[in-house]
Length: 143
Length: 308
Image 1 (tube, rainbow over the protein chains, first blue to last red):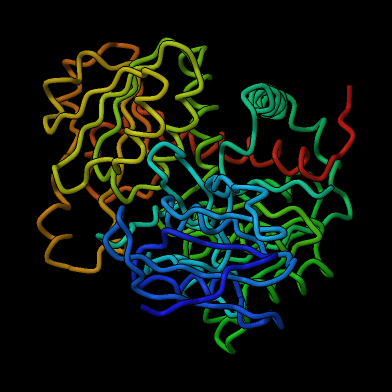
Image 2 (cartoon, each protein chain N blue to C red; image 1 turned 180 degrees about the vertical axis):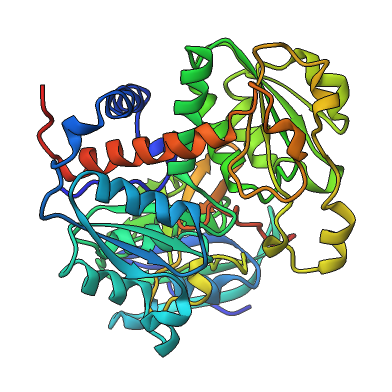
């Protein structure tokens, strides 16, 4: 079994659905960090069978709100001195920017150069989002 | 802060009431408002053809002493050179005091509003929204029925792509005692989100039917719409559905004597010519009201001090 050292200080993003860690890595722009980042794919999980994990070393400021949209099962632990000091609960962000794209061929985002793809939460119970321009609902791919 | 009108719900119910009161006063006393926009310029940015909406905006501004400029199709604008909506509005903001934008792409006026230094009025964006038509419809309903509450509203025709229908439902849903009768072919039913996010959460009474004649006697307002060829990707579907409903004077015999027929125009054949002479035909009154309500909107968005 592959071993990755435990963090003394940092962030552990755990219970990521297997195979989606690189998408999260991209969405959180982790490539811009100078610190050590470990991406663990297909780790064994008693709950999920297989899961991905991302470990970020050090005290870094990363906007994790988008995780609530991507995968509500993801857990985030903040580690200090080798201990969990905070478990972050993932709320659905009210707006998500440049994470998903509008599929409506009539939407201005299909032709406008430089436009940000912005979606607004329209129903938190059903986790539905709408494009702020054309109001078309984002249809999540079937899991 | 610059105020825009992109969605009919950008205005609260009380703001709409004030705006309709102002429009009523403009209709009754046009001279009082004849010079309130002297020196002001309206830009009409129409990326797709329009007769009545563009002329209505222009008439509204001219009626108040202002002037108008703009383009009437994408072909005569910098869009042909690939200019973005964001850049166009930044440029136009340097020329005009207020603008009305029509665009075939949904959300284009909202995009413009993000970059504009002047008020942007959505004059229709694809199959999405048409808020000034909604204000026109509300004014006409209020003029004819004396209220905007406790009414049974029938909406007939293309309820799927008809932007005026979606805007009107959202707006009327904010008034007490509104009941909707949604009359359309199966293929052109009102989108699910209107039902799920507008009607059901507010417990608004509605029924979806395919037969116009059977519900006609129950209605206070019948809002007819055209099946719009330009909204279909497949012409065969358009041909199959375009003649789904045709209102005639004979069919109107079963309707209430004070049930009014509205239509955003242009019509093709969904209202027979013999209906025009019926006193319940209100669609040409709508056109006139559209000018007054746009005058009221321009004055409101420009923050012009109103006469006592």
